[in-house]
Length: 310
Image 1: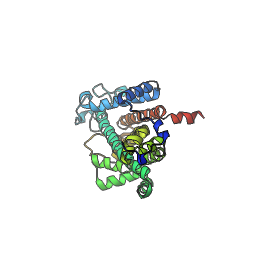
Image 2: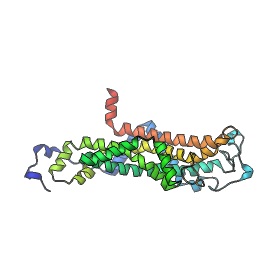
Image 3: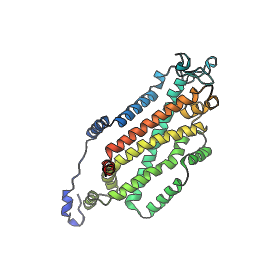
Image 4: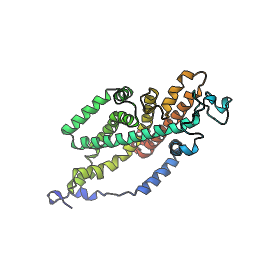
């Protein structure tokens, strides 16, 4: 272990590096979530949606390609329909429950991948810009400001118009701008953390800048990144549904909630269920994600509680 100038100031001896156990922290977090009603409800609902998406072929009453023109525009069971199609059928005779179940796959997968890629890019660039500052920080920050000048949906529509419909094109269009939120958060957090004693202690012990960023700073700001990622996932799901509604998402043969809502817009008065029920499924998922994210913020960021009590 190398010590700069052969001397370590006395205050650095007081700094201790505590290695937390991941499983212990996870169990502790779950215990706190159980005591937070809105976070618990949100988490359980999200888990239910994920299970629905994963096991869609086993729980859906029909095949995703099923269509019966003789059963078109059947109402839900509570409006006089049959239990053979509990949520009714659309204008080409597809079972709406099956379409909603399979549609959850695209929404959840797009939301997860977009947030994962955006968080990775934004965290990397934010850490570099916040720690090193200088020209790198200026260039990245000005580019981020440039992207922020465009409304998100309009920007995504423009990118999809150039790239064309497709799953990975949709991921690219959403990721191209969504990393900025993570960049701004991480940059600000790193600027604050880099002047604290534990970072100065690591520098005095001769640790490299990369090791300090990865091993010392990022673990201390991970909670903030995780909370933002949870909240942004709901927004990305809405963006995916919006692009699919406009016909700019995945190919039309793949069911999505946005395309289902769009397909029922001409039947809003005589077959309200085609647009309404996928919309309700979308609202419930996004609301649950937001409830879970807000609950995590209350649990993981004690500073908010202190500020709120003042």
